[in-house]
Amino acid sequence: MDISTIEQLIKVIENSGVKEFSYKDEEMEVSISTLDHPPVIAPASGPAYVAQPAAPAAQAADEPKGDEEEYITSPIVATFYSAAAPDVPAYVRVGDRVKAGETVCILEAMKLMNEIAAEFDCEIEAILVSNEQHVEYGQPLFRVKRL
Image (tube, rainbow, N blue to C red; front, top):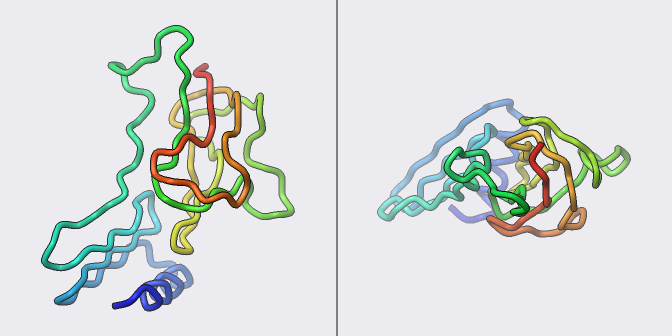
């Protein structure tokens, strides 16, 4: 199965309303989910490689102390979008206060749109990437201050 076949498969799944799909043959295993999970693509005989989400920022043991900077980071390699469409306002701007679970941007990976939400109540101090910029796994997207 080549990448163009996988891309076509993703398009079909997006248009069908199917939430999860898996396919396995002798050479490859593909799992696609439109939930909060990144796609998994791996050889059938080897280990599965999955883009792991960033560690939750709101863990008791990892509570920031004093002036430590906190970030909302990219859980996947993708393209960053600040708004749902070119003609609508950005999800957040510098100075906005957001609640836990509120969408702050969209990351597109393999034609799948992933809404990225704040994991805790915070104020956006800086937007660190530009609209339509390619971002890497773990790359800081926003510098935030916990509320």
